[in-house]
Image (cartoon, rainbow, N blue to C red; front, side, top):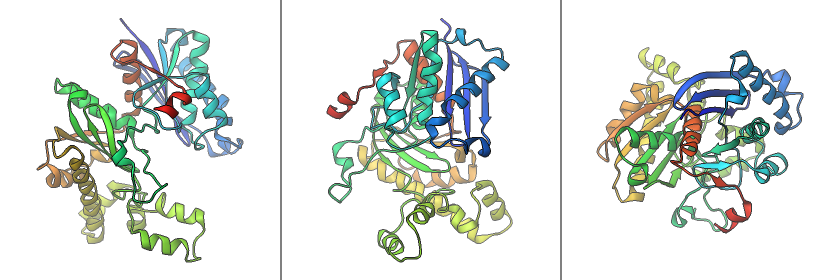
Amino acid sequence: MNYRILAINPGSTSTKIAVYDNEEQILVKGIDHLASDLEKYNRIQDQFDMRKEEVLKVLNENNIEINSLSAVVGRGGLLPPVKSGAYLVNNEMIDRLKNRPVVEHASNLGAIISYEIAKPLGINAYIYDSVAVDELTDVARLSGIKGMDRTSLSHALNSRAMAIKFAKNNNKKYSDLNLIVAHLGGGITVSVHEKGRMVDIVSDDEGSFSPERAGRVPCKKLIDNCFSGKYTHKEMLKMIRGKGGIVSYLNTVDLREVESMINDGNEDAKLVHEAMAYQVSKSIGELATVVEGKVDAIVITGGIAHSKVMTNNIKKRVEFISHVEIMPGENELESLSFGALRVLTGEENAREYSEEVLANA
């Protein structure tokens, strides 16, 4: 049976969409939003009508009849912590994202746009592997300070999708494997998947620095800077997210530029590049202890995984733990579509979103 799925991934300045017939991509498009257009709106939620109309316009321009859709799936926004997999978008989720979002974020629009396109068609809208996926074990949640528990914020969508894809490519079940997945992008997160559950992570402020994020930094020095009087709260946040990492050392966020510097003999660039690989490797090693070293494979994914220099540097440090598989790219639209497809084919079940259920989970 053929299922046609529309996937919607809203970002801060763009909305990416794709249409799949089963696993075949028939349309992919990035819709860029001008800063001057976005400035008209006080809140991200207010951009809903504009973004929805842009999506429908692209479908029309590419002769995709919306009546031909079997389901619509959106990027899961910043909800209260949820389980992995698919959730049916319902009124309770829409109310949360519109009126009481955990954080104002463009991804919150994914569910809202999907729901409003799907509802008149009499088909279901889903989110899949929200940014808020949290399956940490109790022992993983403690941070060292009471009342400051760790939370699970990671690249869950692409990380789980690549873990599932790795299992399928090797004729295995995701639920039978212990996998470590390192997502290397503008931010870097590493997760350990134990028999189908993402039981622990190294978040982007706990591990390696990345092109524009500082990662794990010395706490005492960070506190001293916060109370030095030299920086505002906003400036300190920008220092660790936006102006930290590679850009703070080399004034670029483009790893290709860094590798060009290395080829030109820049020793500082070489050191920074190697330090990032070194720190990613440490995070992988750290998570290997969670499953007592019983790791079936290590998957390296994300946009930076296209860099053979980076992945080779990581691989040489961690391949003693297990086989290393390189699966480059962000793959978010594919991940959304394939997740919804597994629901439509009965391979997975979608959960019903209920904050009462989440609170008691």
